[in-house]
Image 1 (cartoon, rainbow, N blue to C red):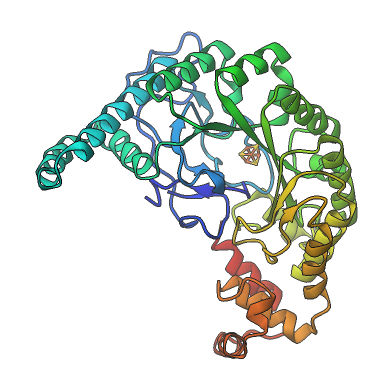
Image 2 (cartoon, rainbow, N blue to C red):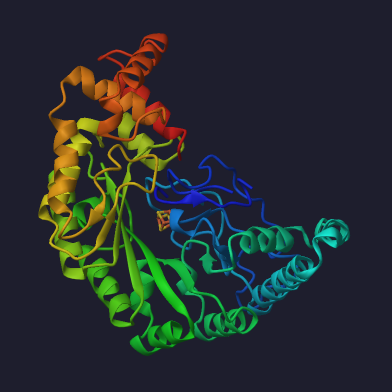
Length: 426
Ligand code: SF4
């Protein structure tokens, strides 16, 4: 996966790519409890073993409660994604998810009680609660409650990669229980695959919306059929369009992801233009830009080594982004600033009013001299720069030039060195 943050709990958690958000370098949360596939008929009934937290979330869900409804990814074939490789998909038992909610509600209730005490009594009360929170069977529910409580208990993210595969009745029961325990929740969101959305009826989606599911994140990644086929995404342009429209028809907000570079040098233009065309049909609420990074363990890395796939560099990636932005005719909010893998965070804004400004932000980079492009690329990837103003600051530029010299970066190795830096973000 290329578009999320690891969860707060594992950083204390890790997700697909971002900037003003918590860390991106967490590790996968070891998951205890039910065996993979345990929801299948005939399987041994799994024992509840405490609340679970999945490995990732969208950047916009940094302050949300992570509620794990399913584990891992049922598709798990995308060539560029390493997130769930070696794992099996399973659907958690409805009763276990509801137990998670109850356990979290218990600790939220305790935290509220402590807050209502006189300040002089809070410390002792929290010490006694801590002993209960630190019991192994409670620790994840307690951590979740503490994190969520500290951010105001506003939003919930249903994990993992494709919660919508859960039977509608089970998902409705979970949503109803969540709302019953926490009536003040302002937003509930989830990831979903386009093909799965198409397997749900309009009536089911309407029920889920009415039960509180407000927003769905779909990893479109591309709408070029050639790119989707090569990457084994398990979707076509038409599937993406139909699924996106179906979500919107159900009254949910929709967030679609696009990955710069996913077409490689071979299909870069087609990737941008076909994706823009699909997005124009869908007109999602959010378009989230990500940039391809290929970890050595990704199946795509073998295609890179064999020459079947040619990675584009940042300059070509900026040209691809320009093509996408130029062809977009939407009313969406386009975000290139919610993940550190993106080179040009200033190319973010609301269409159509910010379109020209966003294009200008990309043109600015494309019109830099090759030497200045290298300075900005290294500065951005070393988290020293985030836009034009940094390149106009002589001290910042001088410090990046020092980093370039100290790290032996030159025009011959800059692409590879940048890729190495980016792999650290995934
Ligand atoms: S659908 Fe593809 S990109 Fe998303 S988690 Fe599964 S394998 Fe990864």
